[in-house]
Length: 385
Image 1 (cartoon, helix red, strand yellow):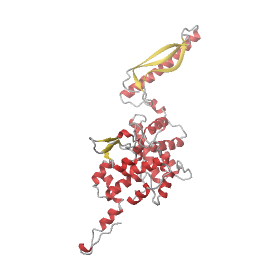
Image 2 (cartoon, helix red, strand yellow):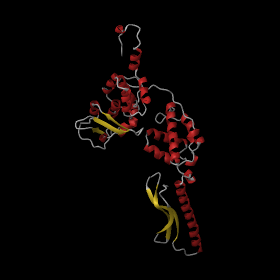
Image 3 (tube, rainbow, N blue to C red):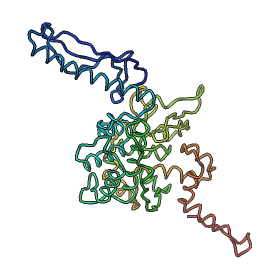
Image 4 (spheres, rainbow, N blue to C red):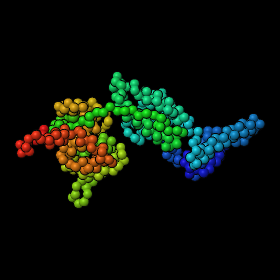
């Protein structure tokens, strides 16, 4: 309950032609339900008494029910006091942690939803806030180590996937603690799962050209992937992109894309190339501002469909959708673009994050080692493939 609620009053209203009274609580000036986020003024208790008791039995019954209703009123008021003065309300421990987790996941992304599904399976569909402790969390960690993949259930989760899921689950715990849902934050006693270093794969310029000239079973997937290669946008930002986020600066000026990134919540304002605008058909017909640019694009397309499209283009690398972002950064780096410019285009807060892409560029590596010569400089011919 929000601390704006100052009083809780027990009241009755007539029901059943006035023969019975129903107890309800009157909150002043109201409270906001933390799950539905709706402000409520009244709460029915589901307790009824006789409006006009005819005998001692009915009067005794009314007295017992009134005591129960008053006990509930006191409990609700105690919750308000606890919230107001930052005391932990023990009644919250009986709250539904799974319902809370699901609500948070639906507002986040597919990764959070996948972790929720695994946790729901782990706890067999029932978990209260009071049950969330270090022991339960470590048991869930052990569960993830043997859990099957969502689609290919005959295979177990990859170590890096487990590490990512575990990190997400710890974020849920932190959020629950911050929201005063759990008494202690287990994260201080939970160890991280180390990931296995993997190469951030990307496409060369020629591979990107080949891919653009190869048909895809899902045209919207092709557009989305190539657009990411041309802009560096993440899949989450591609999915949420609407036409109104593409704007022209000045009269006849450059077109920019202005988005608040789903992952970091930072705003980027990046110019769009003519190829990027042509790819999405920006100048073809009228587009409603709130319509999605890539309507119909689904996460499931980035699995088998993307894999087959890559193979049809003659590319043998293991390419995921996120590799489009790697391709954008690496090709800009190979084109000689300053790394600080690439940092801002990608929306990285720290240039150290962007510098990772310098390790991806074989061309840059070759150029670097080619700067050490044994022959006179005029005899040296730098070969770049």
